[in-house]
Length: 254
Ligand SMILES: C[S@@+](CC[C@H](N)C(=O)[O-])C[C@H]1O[C@@H](n2cnc3c(N)ncnc32)[C@H](O)[C@@H]1O
Image 1 (spheres, protein in one colour):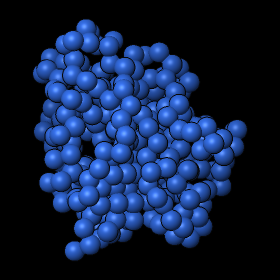
Image 2 (cartoon, rainbow, N blue to C red; image 1 turned 180 degrees about the vertical axis):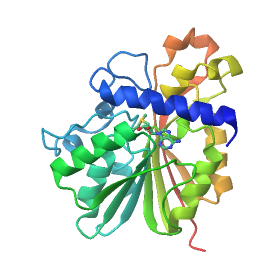
Image 3 (cartoon, rainbow, N blue to C red; image 1 turned 30 degrees about the horizontal axis):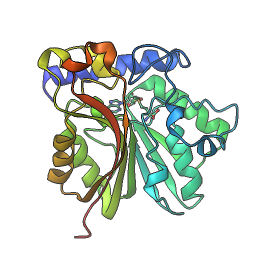
């Protein structure tokens, strides 16, 4: 990875190290005011979490509900944060299933592991790593989920190539992510905090879908769209439309 891409990734890591320490007052996909990614889930989905588990979500959707998980599935969560989606997935795949969360930020992994211990979720494990070079074996995963993470990567093609590599044939991708209609200017992209807040790292939806297709996926679908507030970056007229999309895709059988 080039020096400038490594620099972006390091800034994102530092941002989320601080964000989880300040959980409850922190932000993603927003302007620094208190942010609550749990708003994107149906309350009946979230309410199953015990009260002492920190359900801090930095997400922008609910990739689990649309993932059609089955008992026994192996699930991989790209950028698992404090672990909420892993725990929701773990309930669906049951004792015979397995959930792996990958995140690069040690402070996030610490929180996720503390939550895992409180839940006694023996079918969940968290691994430190980069989503552009996943610490996961080839063709071992049934479903890859991700919530508001791939937009942060400076090398999205590598993320989708890695996702394709670790999925079994017929395996599925189910993500919630920020995309745009139109492009940010180079000056807007250079705003590191806005990139880390899940705004200016986002790419045009057509480019996003092309990257998924070029990695080898088929049956690519945009399932739903929710507007995202990016106006703190400036006049709305000078910005592309920014929104959260739920996207699914499949790795072909052969
Ligand atoms: C916006 S938060 C979302 C966290 C979680 N998915 C959720 O819904 O709460 C982004 C997370 O992705 C992680 N992350 C960002 N870029 C990453 C990368 N290139 N490799 C691994 N983890 C990354 C961050 O450390 C952070 O925990």
